[in-house]
Image 1 (cartoon, rainbow, N blue to C red):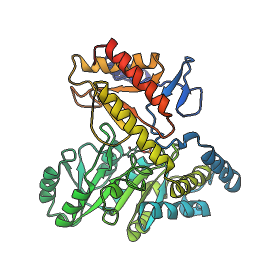
Image 2: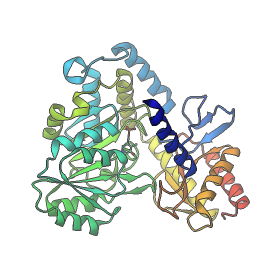
Image 3: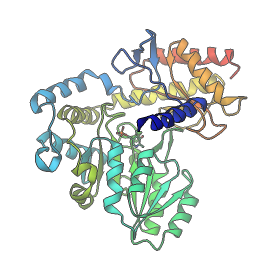
Length: 399
Ligand SMILES: *Cc1c(COP(=O)(O)O)cnc(C)c1O
């Protein structure tokens, strides 16, 4: 039978290519970090990783992974409730709960899985989920798995959130779900105002802080700390695949009874293997480091200010804010979709690795290069990147 399906696949692939949406993967010859080398041999500075705190190849984190690997073995070959729970898993859960200011936490293989497993058991057809339109794909999929009624509000718009809560008023239980940081813009959700509306309309609040845990807020706890509502958010989803080391894994942290119930009913937790001990032990180490010193977080924030100030002074438009995601905008220029791609390619030739995003990843006329700053960047590397942005900007008529 495969012949006919093969034709179907080939047609689909051709259409993806023709629309310019085909994703090519650049193969790295080095560990992840600030200086990387691609298969083509070019050494470049990386400005597009989620390696916010530089933990991807931090020797302390690698040593902790190595220790846990030999202390606890390669893998568990079991889900948690059969024979897949080690002391190191419980230690990570209690450290995550403490770091995030929650009662308890439950581990998943990824934040994608955490979102896939958190909504369905908690909210049945008598309930409602009210979700920001720009929420991550894994929230969208997780919400789809739940039988609850769905309401979507315009990005970060509190008036529309309120309208949706009014429409959902018949529901037995309501939950508001939002990304803490919207990844294409680097903007921070108004978690304080969301909590106010949640109080007024009796809703639970879930924040996915994958782009915030470890570095946003006065002590890096996340957007709930940044917005001054650490005790008012019911559930936090986050990833270990970004600032917390970049390997993989995720969790839901929250109210005691909810986490206990998720251990009984959450399908990706019940029916998927335990997190590998090496990742688990390394993530414990990351949380220890973050608890002992503010150095990396402060370096990340000062690097971010350096880049944001410099790029604006050079005449580029950016989305204002404080987040190390810095979108450099091209929407006001002619042929912005092509320009953002050409710009990213020209920067790569100059030794700066960034990615251009255009429609349909972002709306029409909102093409951009998304720069991501890391604590591991040296100030002179940021200055070098700014020089190259100016150079390419003049060459392509963007400034
Ligand atoms: C990256 C991201 C995820 C997925 O995290 P993984 O652990 O890689 O699955 C989920 N939610 C948000 C908001 C993210 O930014």
